Length: 123
Image 1 (cartoon, rainbow, N blue to C red):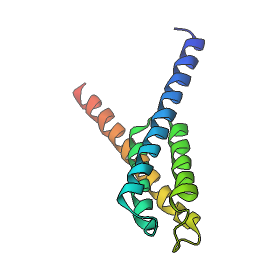
Image 2: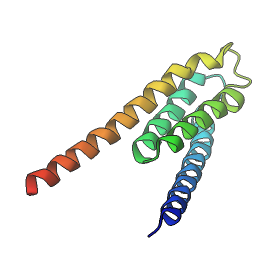
Image 3: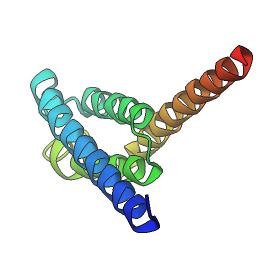
Image 4: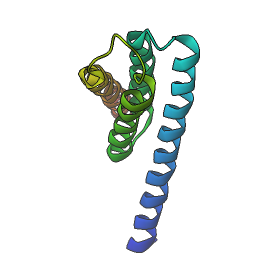
């Protein structure tokens, strides 16, 4: 397997994870709209942030994780918080997304460390 093949495999994996993250955000945004009315942006942001954290825990590429978080924040600010009267500054919910992504990535890192410790213990 050459260097060009490895680079192509990485690109394909990144594209696959970007598509998975984007689809996850779209499905979650529909779920947030169904579960919470426009007057409850806190419920919508919690649904979106939870999905963001779960996607961050499952996506292995850090670029796909960041892009998914940015897409989720953008969808929330432009679509889900639009028209909600009690939300004068929807960008103020950004720290919720940041915390969710940090927790998701931390969870993934801990699981990888546990797996590597199990492998070392078997030797």
